Amino acid sequence: MDNHTLALTAARARLLGLEMVYGAASGHLGGSFSAMDVLTLLYQEEMRVDPAAPRDPGRDRFVLSKGHCTPALYPTLALRGFFPVEELGQFRSIDGHMSGHAEMHHVKGVDMSTGSLGQGISAAVGMALAGKLDGKDYRVYALLGDGELEEGQVWEAAMAAAKYELDNLCAVVDVNGLQIDGKTSDVMPTEPLDRKFESFGWHVVKCGGHDFDSIRAAFAQARANQGAPTVILAATVKGKGVSFMENNAGWHGKAPNAEQYQQARAELEARIGELEVQ
Amino acid sequence: MEKIATRAAYGQALAELGEQYPDLVVLDADLSGSTMTKAFAEKFPQRFFDMGIAEANMTGVAAGLAACGKMPFVNSFAMFSAGRAWEQVRNSIAYPRLNVKVIGSHGGLSVGEDGATHQCIEDYAIMRAIPGMVVLSPCDGPEMRLAVKALLDYEGPAYMRLGRLAVESVTDEVEGYRFELGKGVQLRPGTDVTVVATGMMVQEAVKASDLLKAEGLSVRVIDMHTIKPIDKDILVQAAAETGAIVTVEEANVLGGLGGAVCEVVSQHHPVPVIRHGVKDEFGRSGEAKAVLAAYGLTAQDIARTARHAVEKKKGPKA
Image 1 (cartoon, one colour):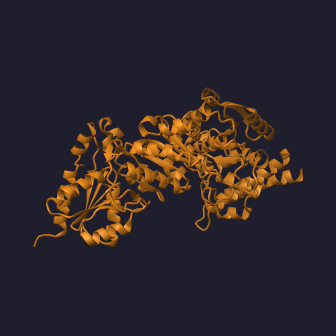
Image 2 (cartoon, helix red, strand yellow):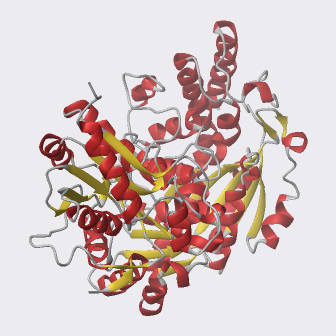
C-alpha cells in the first residue's frame, strides 16, 4: 500500500478512535494514537490475514500486549474489513462486546485477550513456539508500550524467545516516553532499550513510528533476521495527531470533554481532508 | 496395595498418554525432577519446554500455545503455578477460556521441611475463585491417572494439585469406583456423619471412618477429587441421610473444599458442617508427617472432629 493511502487510513482510524472514546466517555487515546501508524501498516501491508477467515490456522498473529490501546486496534481491524465500523459504537458499552481491553472471542480479528500489562508478549512467544513446533510459516507480532517494559514478565518472555530462537516473532515497542504518572524516564527508567534487548539475545531494529518508509523497512529487516526474535523500537509521539494531546501524559486514559472533542475532531478531519485532496 | 505419590502417577500418565495426544505439550519451571514431568521430557523432548524459573511467562506462553491448538500442561509447585502466577492464570488462561491445565505439585503442608514459603494452603481457594476454573485434587495413584486422562479430554482451563508424599491407594479397591470430573465418590457407606475429603486427606478420612466404626459410629466417606464444579447431588444426599458433614483438606479452612461444601449445604440442605484443615495460619518446617500431625491433619484428629459433628447434630442440650 502506498504511503499516502496508509496515512489516510491511519488518520481515519484516529478519528474512529476519538469517536469511540468520546462516545464511551472513557478509554485510552494517547497510546492508541502513538501506535496507530505502526498498526495501520502492520494490518494493511505487513501481516498475512484474511478478514473473511479470521481463524485461519495459517494466518499471521497479532497480540496487543498494551491491551488498553483498543482505540487503535479496533478501528484498524474495522478498516481492514474484519467488521463494520458501526460496531465501534459499542465500545465499552454494556450493550455490546467491544470490551475496553482487547478481547478475542467477540471481536473479530483479535488473536489474544489482553489488558494486564506484560502478559501479551508471553502469549505471543507461545504462538511463535507453536508455529515452530508445527513447522508453519506464520509470523507473530506483538505491540508493547515502553512503560509496559517495567513489568518483569516482559523480560522473562524475552529470555524464552531468545532461547527458542523465535525468528518468527517480532515485537514492536511503542516508545512514546510517557506513562500514566508521567515520563517513563522519571517513573521507572527503561532505557537503554536497544542494549537491553540485544543483551537478551534479540535483534534490535529502530524506526520512526510515524514514518511509513521507516516502519516498512523495519518490518522487512525483522523478516530477514534469522535465529533470534526481533524487536522494533518505534520512536513515537503519545497522542499523535491531536495537537493538545501530543506528548501529554494526561491523555493516557482520559476521555475528552465536548469542547476538546470538537477541537480534536476538527484537527483530524482537517488532516483527512488534506490527504483526500492530494 | 500400591503406594505412590500422586505426582509420580501424574508423571507416568503424562508420559504414557503423550502418544495418544499429539497436541499435548508440557512446560515446567526448573522443577521437572520434582513435578515428575521428566519422564515426558525424555520421551517427547520436542514437546517439553523448560521455561526456567519464570512462572508468569510460562503461564502466558502456555496461553499462546493453546491459542494455536496445543494442549499445554504447565507445572511447578502449587505455591508458584497457582500462587505466583495467579493473575496470569486468571487473565491469560481463564478469561479467554484457553485449554491450559495448570498443575500445582507439592501442594499443602506435606512439602514439609521447606517450610511455609513453599507450603501452599491457599490453592483450592484462589483457583476456585476464578470464574469457570475447574479445580481437582486426586487422592491416590489410580485416581490421578484417571484424572490426567479426564483433563486431556476436557477442553478448558483447569487446575490440579499433586502431592509430594507416597500415599496408599484407597480408590482401587472400591467396588463400582469410576472417575468422572465433577462427581464425588463414596468410598465408605455411613449414616451418622459424612466426611468429605480431598487429596491425601482422603486416606486419613478412610482411616478415621475405620477407627470410629470400632466405636459404633457409622461414618460415610466421600472422596471429593473435584472441588470445582462441586458435586451438589452427593452432598445434598449426604446432608439428608447423615445430618452432619465434616470437610477435610490439607489447606486453609477458608474458601477451599470446606467453603465449597458449605455453599452447597447451606443453600440446599442446611445441616452442621465442620471444616477440618489448616486453621488460618502458616505452616512451618518439619518432616512432612510431623507437620501434618502438628496441624491436626491425621485420622485421629479427623475422628475427633467427626465425633464432635455427631454431637452437634443432636442440637443444643435442653
